[in-house]
Length: 102
Image (tube, rainbow, N blue to C red; front, side, top):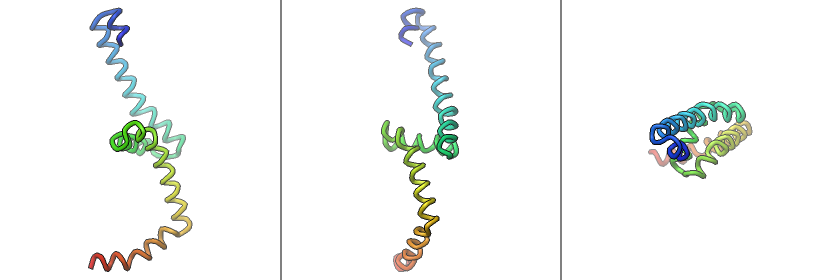
C-alpha cells in the first residue's frame, strides 16, 4: 500500500487498500474456517465463532489457541461421556443441587 501511494498517488493506494481488505476478508471468513473445519472435523461456523471469541477474550494468543482448545475440549467431553464419568458426576451432584435450590 505504501508502495502504491509512492508510485501512483492516493487513488492507487486507496484501490490497493480495498483489494487487500477484500482478500483478507475472504481468507479469514470463508477459506480458513472451511479448511480448518475439514481438517479438524468440526463445523466451519464453530471455527469462525470460536476464533472471534478467542480474539475478544485472549487477544493474539486467544486467536491462535481458540480452535485447538475447542477441539481438545470436545474430544475430552466425548471420551468422558463414553466412560460414563459425566453421568456419575451428575448423579452425585443432584442431591447437593436440590438442597441448594430448596
